[in-house]
Amino acid sequence: MRKRIDKILNPEYEICLCRHVKTGAVIKPIRDNDITSLKQLCRVVGVGDKCGGCRGELEELLDYCLDEDILLMDLLDD
Picture: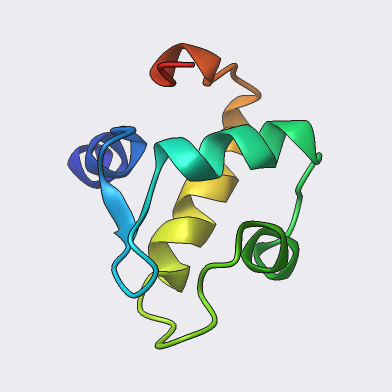
């Protein structure tokens, strides 16, 4: 399981293949918008609404961010 979350946490990982959205583009909105649900994340970021194949990984990323209560800003190149 740890390997999977490490892959997902990579800011260059394309978490949504349909929309070509990378993890780095998902982390900032989670923090900036206090996102706590997958539905809210999908709406705000604009992912997970086409084939739905990314929803599992998006939920895992969101759960990790919420459970760990960590700052992921260091993963971003802003």
